[in-house]
Length: 327
Image (cartoon, rainbow, N blue to C red; front, side, top):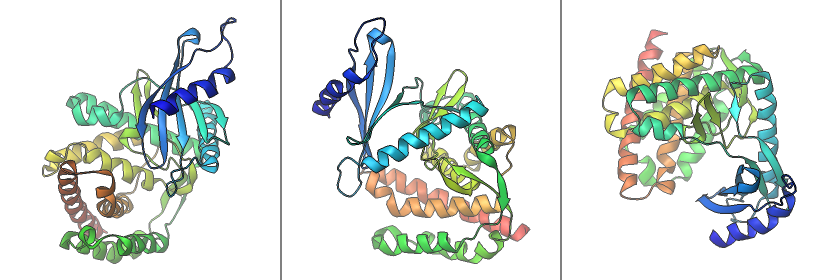
């Protein structure tokens, strides 16, 4: 990635406007590489400018994906428009799109990720980060336009069945996974009768994609997907947040702490998430995680990850059973 960073410097310097007659001296360094993108940080001392540079990739070929880059730039632009309606919706601002090279340049946001705070911070710091995250999501959904309706779970169940069928047997053979799939099927009809809030989706809402700063949190890597139940974004966040401290998953208090802090923020943002559909969406999501985690988590870390996912799955199953009985 170092050679690509030098190439990006040559590409971007002529495109950035001079500051007080001084041409850009942008320097670029690699940040991370994934199957969907390569990410760099650019700094220009002359213009006191810090940017994030994302090269969007086709996950199948690993080549630059111009369509994905254009969609990402449009998504950032859409969320910036929402932030004008509600300034507490912090987000990265798009600066430049080079569609042919699949390059998106956006403003850099300084600060630790919510993931880091939840994993390593004090209890008070983690509570604040979780509450601010819940409020951000509620405000984002509200600004994008809330509607209410039932959730047809047939497509979601079909997708999950296809994912499980395509996964290696080692991912799906455990009795916990089999029980979870059965429980999702048994409760789907009941869940599908409950009205839930719908809105545009962040699309990858998790603690690692939220930056904590002085005024709140700001979101990055936003897909800005079409409307879906708000609990889909929330379920992903809550599961990833709980998994930040896997050694505490056997303790009821840890997951309750995460849930209560997040829901307090959601209430402050004006959105209440129905319990039973949220529990169903969380179990659905954690089953998906179980089929995929070995792709992005390698031994020995994957051993801890897998154990944590199993613990969380068991807890969510018990919660879903209890909530279903209350209905």
